[in-house]
Image 1: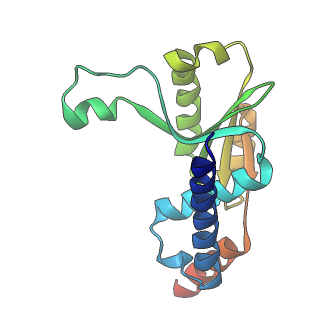
Image 2 (image 1 turned 180 degrees about the vertical axis):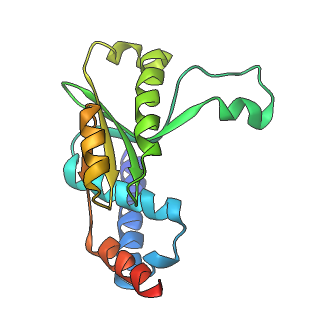
Length: 171
């Protein structure tokens, strides 16, 4: 990689980290839209838990529907929150700030779609792990999730704890 490209990549990485830090320090996380808070939680978790693994956010799974017009075709392409390509397995991650049972069905469907995705055909021989990443503990949903062979992971960085406390105060 040319030096200028490496510098540009490093500058982008620093910018991303700086933005996250400013959001946390200025307590602006509550002003982010729900999807952006989930993306922030996921990005932090990936940095902490999978810093060396190859991972992608918002990955399209399944067969494309190129003959479908506009948004109709786009809706037939599913996007998982993250895909981690490890040495020994592939992990599909769906993130949600709150414990949401719908995410479990999404993960099961994403696994089926992953196995049909042409660009990942070479990964089908490795085990596929499913992970539901959430900021909220729910013992009943955890038991259900784990009974399906899906990992239930609670990740609560300080900014998320503060966000939940603020929401509780607001009612």
